[in-house]
Amino acid sequence: MKTLLKIYNFLIVAFLYLPIFVILIFSFNSGTSRAKFEGFSLQWYQELFADELILRSLYYSVIIAVLSAVIATVIGTMAAVGINSLRGWKKSAFLSVNNIPVVNPEIVTAISMMILFVFVLSYFNGMEMGFGTLLIAHITFNIPYVVLSVLPKLRGMDQNIYHAALDLGCPPAKAFLKVVIPQIMPGIISGLIMAFTLSLDDFVISYFNSGASFQTLPITIYSMTKKPYSLKLNALSTLLFAVVLVLMLAVNIKKPKNKKAKS
Image (tube, rainbow, N blue to C red):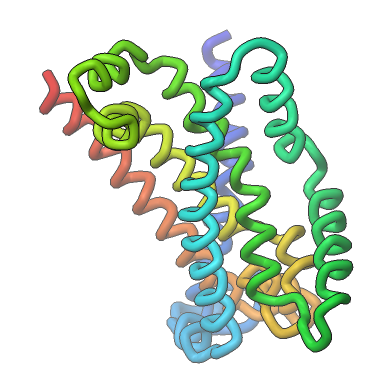
């Protein structure tokens, strides 16, 4: 039984990571074949960094991801504090409303926001969808995830600490910043990272709400797949995977060090 479980786990891991390994290998291919490795070369990385369209799309994606993550984290944290203070059916109602965008099909959210933007912009001559509409769309779909990340930390926090700060003469705003925020900071950071990742990776909502003059990296990659396939996409995928891998290793290495420091 244990042998079968090991084989099953190996097959799952191979199914998940073998395509990434193939992309990594062929990103260094000197030829244009996607099935035959003709030799080692860095030409696709050179062409990638010389492609202005990809670099500009990457810049737009990072800007949108950073701004939407920060703004959604601030709004989502405030919303989580407000929801946590409610009781009874009001709290259940707000939680249900917050969870709707999470379980709702992304295509429905994208089209509904596009219709809303078209309706609003029709009253402003000359204005088109672009950076502003895409930023609002990303903030909107990121907020529920931030709320879901912060709420468990608020529920697990000892409320007596906040009330003790008030009893000792600390103003409510200062008590919130000095007492509550440090207690829920892990949830805030988790929500921020999740919002950044979802925004950077999003395609459907970006495709419907970005307009013709503003393209993020996922949209650019999608448009490139309609043309003859270029191994520049392999190089780009390898770099993105490397960045994520480094971040994951840094987080996992830091956790044991923090545990040792606490012990």
